[in-house]
Structures are given as structure tokens and as C-alpha cells.
Amino acid sequence: TLLVSRSTFHANDAGTGGGIWTGGAGDSTLLNVTFDSNASWVSGAALSLNAPATLNNTTLSKNFSDNDFDGTGDGALEVNAPVVVSNSIIAGNVDFSVVVAGVVNNDCSVGPAGTLTSAGSNLFGILGNACVLTAAQPGDQAGTPASPLNPQLQPFDVYGGTVEVFLP
Image (tube, rainbow, N blue to C red; front, side, top):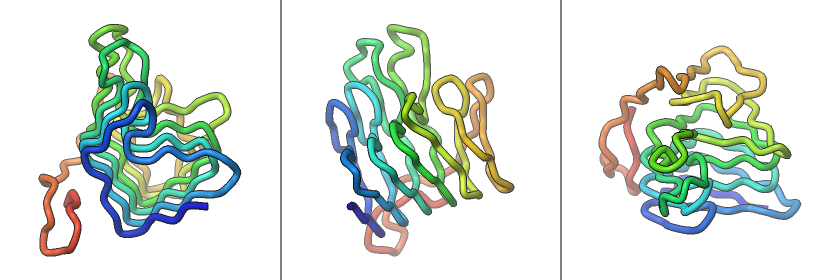
């Protein structure tokens, strides 16, 4: 079981799950967490969730997947288990697969064993392709590969608090 609250993951690098990789049977809960400038060689530049998880007030922006430019890898968020997301921003991420493969899944990818379910009030830069949202709720906003949404976040900084964040 994992609980992360009021934290920032910045400039981490891994094969999969640049910021956090989860597995096993325990649930993960992320509350008020920011992921910025994390990278993966494959998928899940910020998060690779391979066990049930809940994301609330979580921001994933400016993370980089397929950082080795080999054409394999997708998204700042990789979902391979049931994941519920609310009050979160997942936008403005980069998938370098476009350089080799031409397929871009910047913000997230949902695997065959995964589901990404909304509990409301989320902003997704790009849905579609490999990122499908189950049960969209009122207040959810989503762009498409042809017309991504810009989250219009302020630069990554402290803003009078104790950890760096993006202000809307």
C-alpha cells in the first residue's frame, strides 16, 4: 500500500515509471502530488500504475516518455490496473515516439488490464489513441490528438509554499 500526499516528483528517470512505478496487490493513493520533468525510456514518464490507484488533485505536466527515441513507449501516465482520477491535470507532456514511430500518446496510455475512470473535474490534454477515459463526468475536459488542450499552467515554482508546483 502506498500513500503519497503533498509532494513533488521532479526530474527523475527510469526505464518505466520515471517518478513512481507500482505493482502487487496493494492500493496506491496520491493526494496533492505534482510530477514535473520526469522521464522514462519506455512508458509512464511520471507514473506507471500496475496496481489499483486513486489520483486526487494530482498534476502531471512536462514529463517525457520514450526518452531513448526508439519508438516504444507512451505517456506520462501508464495505466495497467484500475485507476480512479479526480480534480487532476494530465496535460502538456511529451512522447518522443513521434520521432521514430509517428504515433503520439503524450499524456497517458491505458493497457489491456487497465481502466482509467473519472470521478470528475479533470483536465486531459489528449485523450484517444491509447488513452481512453471510462465514465467521463461533468467538469471533465479533454483534448484530442488533433486539438490538444493547453492546461495554461504557470511555470514550475514554489509560489509561497514549501514545494514546487504548477499554478493554474
